Amino acid sequence: MLVFSACNKRLTSLDASHFKTTPNPLEVKGGIVDATVTGTFPTKYFSKNAEVTVTPVLKYIGKETESDSKTFQGEKVLGNNQAINYKMGGTYTINPHFTYNPEMAKSELFLNFDVVQGKKRYSIPPVKIADGVIATSQLVSISPDEIKSAIAPDNFQRITQETQNADILFLIQQAQLRNTELNKSDIQEFNRKVKEAREAQNKEIANLEVLGYASPDGPLELNTNLAEQRQRVTTNYLNNELKKLRADVTIDSKFTAEDWDGFQKLMEASDIQDKELILRVLSMYEDPEQREREIKNLSITFLDVANEILPQLRRSRLNLTVDVTGKSDVEILNLANNNPKVLNDKELLYAATLVDSYREKAVIYEKFIDQYPEDARGYNNIGVIRYEQDTANEAEILFKKALGFDPNSPDANYNLGLISLAKGNPTDAQAYFGKAAGTTGNLDAALGASYILQGDYAKAQNALSQTSSNNAALSQILNNDYNGARRTLAAVANPNGMTAYLAAIIAARTNDRDAVYSNLRTAVSRNKTLAYKAASDLEFAKYFADQTFLSIVK
Image 1 (cartoon, rainbow, N blue to C red):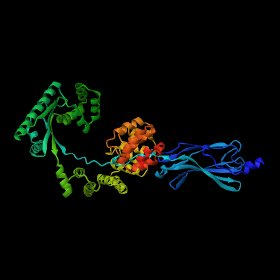
Image 2: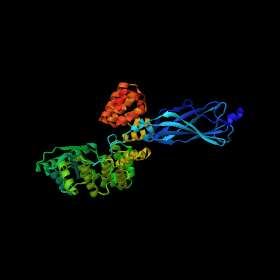
Image 3: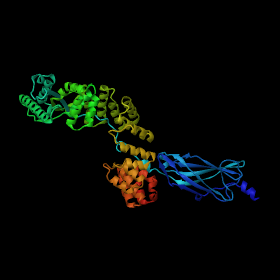
Image 4: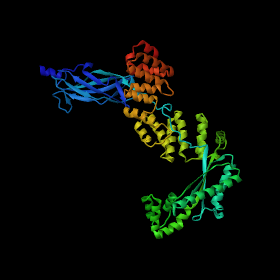
């Protein structure tokens, strides 16, 4: 009779006390809700001929999502499932796993029990084992206010520099200027550039330099005197030219007694036999006299050096640097609107920074694309406009077009990473971010957000350690660094509703009731939708019956 009862009695409902769920409430991490459920079948409960399939089910707003089930069997069942002893009962573990969606925040986790007992099939009542999902990690923001998108730089400079240089050569051991040198085309062109800089309204001489040199052969004292004299006579010549132009310019002059650096550069560029041997001498010896002796010992090669290299080092060098002031903002904007073809790429991109509205910026970027159709920057920058206007699909097309012209564009890669984050694909986002070094966007902020979405909170906090933002504070909250999170929130430059909401979460976790109230009031005053969120957010579960709390979130 006992055997018959142990095999054939119908299984009855189970009490919630037979189950422990960790965590409870559930928590979303990396877009996944995972839990560990430890269950117990009590003694003299599990019929010897029964099979029980246990299925975790998350129920929310009229919907439900099942996780993988697990089957257990009685002692007399032939099978490969975990066996449960009738007299002793048994303990088991099951691991519910759900892909999170926001509707799950207000939910309940149940276990369903389906029984096969001989020829009978039936279910016993489900058991509720957990309430709701804490989704604090999902408060991460990828909005342009939190993570700025990347505009490709225009590289515009109002003041640019032009340079001009020329050499005056001297005969060996002499410092006299020769007409043949002064009449050379490069000297004449140098003088013309000086005159042009003096006369042009948008140009100014920034630096005028004379460098006197002697070749590295002969006694050092002789070479020092020669280099100094060459510098002096060249400076005098240039001063006379400046007087003709009535130009008040100070010449910066200096000399180098033995021009070993120039010697090395000319040797490297030459095709002289045994040049590698001479270059090795330069690397082996620092003493000038030792260098000269070793090179002269290469008798045949030294003749080539004396004829081809040394004459070029007996010189004065003239260096001119001119500051050129470009178009004014008014001129650039007027031309961008009326005659963009006269603007170069830098000026036209810069013009877009001179207007405020998305519409005006987009018009200029469209003109840039018309004028420079293979330049990735135009597509990237108008893509940013579309992204910030919440037309992410159009933005994605434009960013990918930018990559088509420049696969290494750090800004287009970065922006596509933001698009991937918006789609909930942090792994894809990180692949793009890996190609975004040098972007004008905030790469650390973007990486921090992607780590939060992946559930790697330690990496997120590290990436955001130099950032004072809501996301940075969120990463600290998720790592239980509440003091650090408070400091970060206090330093946020433009606090919004979420800034105060995160402060309220910290207060709730640290049992600071008054701070919960005050921060929630601030949050709701800045963003009324946060009242609805707080009303069901399990971070505030202990306040759900609190009248002050209810008055704030009503």
